[in-house]
Each structure stands twice: as C-alpha cells, then as structure tokens.
Amino acid sequence: MKRATRATALALMCLGASLGAGLLAMPARADIAVALAGPLSGSASIYGRQARSGAEAAVADINARGGLLGQRLVLTVADDACDERQAVTVANTLVAQKVAVVIGPVCSGAAIAASTVYAQAGIPMISPTATAPALTERGLRNVFRVCGRDDQQGEVAAALIADRFKDRKIAIVHDRQPYGQGLAEDVKRRLNAAGIKETLFTAAAGEEEQAALVSSLKADGVQVLYYGGYDQELGLIARQMAEQRFHPQIIGADGIQPQTFWNIAGNAAEGTLFTFPPDPQINPAAKPVVEAMKAKNLRTEGFTLFAYAAVQAYAQAVGKAGSTKPDDVVKALHANPLETVIGTLSFDDKGDVTKPGYVVWAWKDGKKVQLDR
Image (cartoon, rainbow, N blue to C red):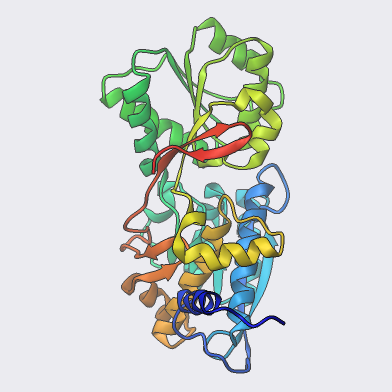
C-alpha cells in the first residue's frame, strides 16, 4: 500500500468530517438498520439505481470509519417500483423490521403514499429525490427531502420560457403522475400569470406509441414543448417527433437527466433543455467521495450524491443528538445545519431544504451540460 500524500490525507479528513459528528473510530457494537426505498424495477429503475449507489457508498464510508456512535449501519434495499400501493406495502414491511431511518422513497407518488405509514411509526424519512410539494405540505414532522420542490424548478422553467420563448406556440404535456402533472400545472400557472397562454395542455398516452400526440402537436404548429415526466416517455416522444420531421424546442425537468433519455431519443434529444440542481460532482466537499466512487467504477451523476447526502444528514443528526431514537433524530434534523456532499443543508419546519437551487441544463452530443453557473 502506498503512503498517502499530505493532500490525500487532508481530503480523507474532510470526508470524515462531512460524514458528521458521532462517527467514532471504534469497533461496531451493534447494528443500526437503515433502509432505502425506491424503484429497482420498472421504467423508473434508473433513479432507484442512482439512489442505491449513493446510499451504499455512504453506508460503507461510515462503517469504514467505525460506524455511527460505535454501531455498524446495515442497509436494506426495498423495491417499490415507483408504485404507490407497493410503496405502502414496502413501508409496512420496513416498519415491522424496525428500521431506524428510511432513505427515500425515490418517486413522488410513492413517497407521498408511504410517508403516512412512516409518520404513524415515527420513523425519520429522508427522500433524496421526491420533489412534489404535497410531500411536505401535510405537517409530517418526520418527513424530509434533500432536493428541492417542483414549484421551485417550475419557477425556473417558466422564467426560461417567458424569457426566451414567450412569442412561440407552447404546449405543456404531462404523464398523469403526481410528479409530472404537478410540474406541468405549476409551469402553466406561472406562464398564465405572466400573460402567456399555452396552445395546448394535455397528458401523454403513457404508452410507447406517441404518434397521435406528436401529430396533434405538429398540426397545432407547436414550437416549444414543455414536458412534465420521466426520461423514457419523453425519449419516445422526441424520437417520434423526429420521425415526423417535427422539431420543437423541448424543455423538461430533473426527470429527464438520466442517460436513458438520450439513449432512447438519440440525436432528437440534441438541444433539449431541463432544470436540475447545480452539479454536485463539482462541489469541493464531494471531491473525495466522487474520486473514491469512480475508482470503483461507480457513477456519481444524477441523484447519486443526493442519496449519499441523505445518509449523511441522518448520520450527522444522530451524532448531534447522541442518540438513534427517532424523536431525537427528527429534532436534530430540524435544528441543525448539516454538511453534506451537496452542500450545507438546513431544513425548515416542513422538512424542505431552506436553500434549494435549480439551474438550466442542456443535452449536447449525448452529454448533460450545465448552462447556468
């Protein structure tokens, strides 16, 4: 084993600090059950895989330093397939297993449905990805998210459209799911308030064949398509628009950041704009984690680091509380700023981060490029 350089040693020290107080370098005496709930199957599985990778890396890093309060974290991964009913079933199972914290659920609809179960059990729930405002609008003190909300990224998207495309024919399409429909309705509301009226507001078919929708958009002369939903369906829409030689400006949200969007749409995705938080991979606090994960051939894009940060937030709250009791952890999450790989996080009374941020990204040559820095 090569001797570490001073820079490497400092980086490792920073990594240890970022994992939070209470991570003691001593043999683990017991286990703390941590659960990740998200889609490992189905069309949204890419988000589940990103979250799983981040959570596993964070748990491994904490355990490598001796655990949390001298205890070893044990991660359970549960597949809810981004389905509301399955998410409730998963939640009841995890409650019965007496998990200490749930990282997730990943999808907004699943998170909203499952959160009631976790609230009744008093288990802290920290979602790395669920953005629907309704998740944190119901007074559930145990529910948190480390990402922003759809009404925050909707604000950025509406401002983008109003600034660059207000004189174009605009269509707003969604996938009927809480995440996508909520986004579409928020963008519509903001544009209408600014005096901009869309040409069409409708739902996608939810199937592979989108020819009827594309034909309708083309017949209406749509020049800008805002889409609320996920990567696979919009990828199919973009590809079928190209097949009809129809090329409106496409604008989406964080649901189209996975590489699968480009893989499905191909060159039809070129120039697509979308909202997403500033790239956490370039955050100095994330550098040791990113380098360590990449050294293991693990990807760190998308929501991977958000899941890592959710585990960090729990770990630091336990450290600050000096306890793994759910009530103590929830109080510590609400009361303390937490240092994570995606930046310093503070939660408001609802469980939302107090300083969320969304910027505009673009798909160019098969890669995601952050336009606002």
